[in-house]
Length: 133
Picture (tube, rainbow, N blue to C red):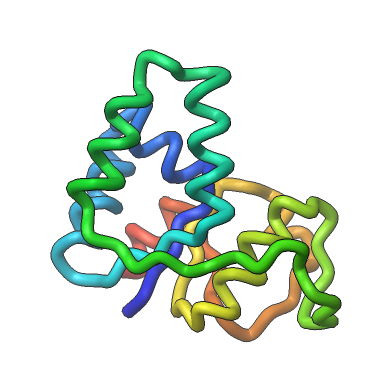
């Protein structure tokens, strides 16, 4: 199974290192395939530079040491008609997940659960992912 992480999950996993986030990363490393899109990596780097500069090395270590597939996010996004979502950043992530044909997108962002209708990927919160997989 191929799983993509949204930016908020990646930031939480690296900065806060809570037990659920560690468990998600461990499952991805041992059982599943992690997919990160270029948009998420760029967005996370910006967040770390502005809000968590002390953790920049932790981010770089994660990106170097953690095996993942890189999915390219086209810029600008083409007109697609696949779904409607309020936030353009979320549109970039979800479009990348669809383009990369991932099975699951893990996010804590409520915009994804507010009337977004896609058959695939399955969009789950961290808790839902841990309970289901």
